[in-house]
Each structure stands twice: as structure tokens, then as C-alpha cells.
Figure (cartoon, rainbow, N blue to C red):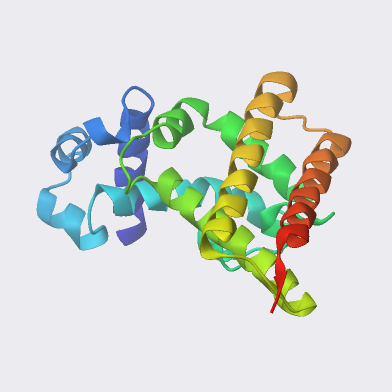
Length: 206
């Protein structure tokens, strides 16, 4: 029963997200459309953001788990500086292909999540974790070389890699759909490493 209710709420919110952004959806809307009372909703989810995160994790984690290597909480793993999930080594090719397939299969829903101005929306949290993961990887490389960057430069480096990745995702979506060729994925991986090399070159010795 627990799984059935959770999935009902997730499906209801997913249907709503196909036509309106997250900031225009309220718990009362979800309960009215699903027939689930508010008390039951809050038994399963803290708020609409918790449900939106559950939906987002379900979409992308399920896709990544198909290749048998990644934990359910994709975004938390991203924030830990996992190389494969941060598009920085060759194993990322499959990850990027799966990510694009998941995005294309849920485009209207994903659009209303990704373009939300709400800072608590999953994709805005994903942005923070994406940048955090990139900064961890950069810091690991700097530490191994006895170098350091200022906090502002570290933040700028993370933002640069995020913007670069988003630009490529948008181009791939338009050009390739769900059929991302490995060589295109490798171009982004190589570019990400060049960005890391650029910032390492700016670093000072400790």
C-alpha cells in the first residue's frame, strides 16, 4: 500500500508538471487530483519539493541503475565528486547517454522542473550539487599538486563547468535526441578536463 500511494502521488505531480512549473503547483492541487488527503500526503513526503526530488531521482537513478553501477541517490553521489557522474572520465560516456535518454523520455516534465525559479526545486539543488562535485574534484587535484585557489576562483570554476555542461546538453537534445554518439560525449569530457587544467594553471603553490 505504501508504494502504491507514493507512486500515485508521484504520477499525479508528474502529470501536473507536464503543464505547469513547480512554483505554480501546490500540495492542495496534488491531493485534489490524486484523491489523497493532506494528512496522508505528509505521511509520505515533507512537502512538494520532497515529492519533486523523489520524482527526479526516480527518473534519473532508474536510468543510471540500468548500467548496474550507481546508487539510487544520483544527485548526492554527484556532489561527492564521483568522477563517472561528473563527466570527467571515459566511463561517463554511458552515463551521459543514459541521462539524455531519461531527459528525452520526460521532456515536458523535466522542462518545468529545470526552468523553475524556485530555489528549492530539484534541478536547482542538482545545480548546487553538480558544482560542488566539480569543486571537490578540482580540490583533489590541487591538493595532490600542493596548490590552491581562492574560494571565489573555486566557485567560478564550478560555475564554468556547470554552464559548459548545460550548453552541451541543450545542443545534444536538439541535435541527437536519445542517440548521443560516444564521440560527442567524449568532446565534453575532454573539455571539462581542459577547464580543470586551466584553473590548475592559475593556482598558487601552498
